[in-house]
Image 1 (cartoon, rainbow, N blue to C red):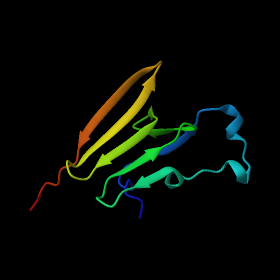
Image 2 (cartoon, one colour):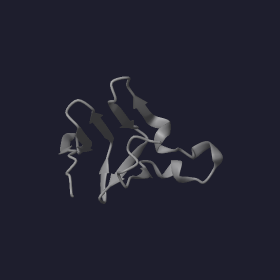
Image 3 (tube, rainbow, N blue to C red):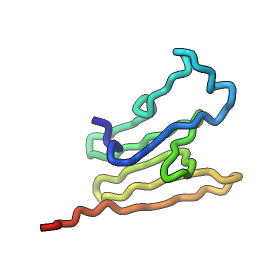
Image 4 (spheres, one colour):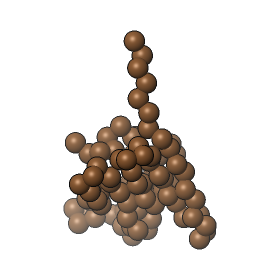
Length: 92
């Protein structure tokens, strides 16, 4: 199971040339996933955007020690980072 399964993510290619529907251009998000032994992971590519909550991001990083998810996007050479913390809450 992909470690980001709980996030509703989509892919959008950055270049119109890459949107051609050929088997050579089909990319799965997990094709650009880097997982580390300590549970950290990073997903992203210079070739496509990762869409989350209708916002385009270049990379998503997860820090297993802090339980933080970092969404990174480049907006006209201005790096913007949105940081979220995962938290489990007992409900009963």
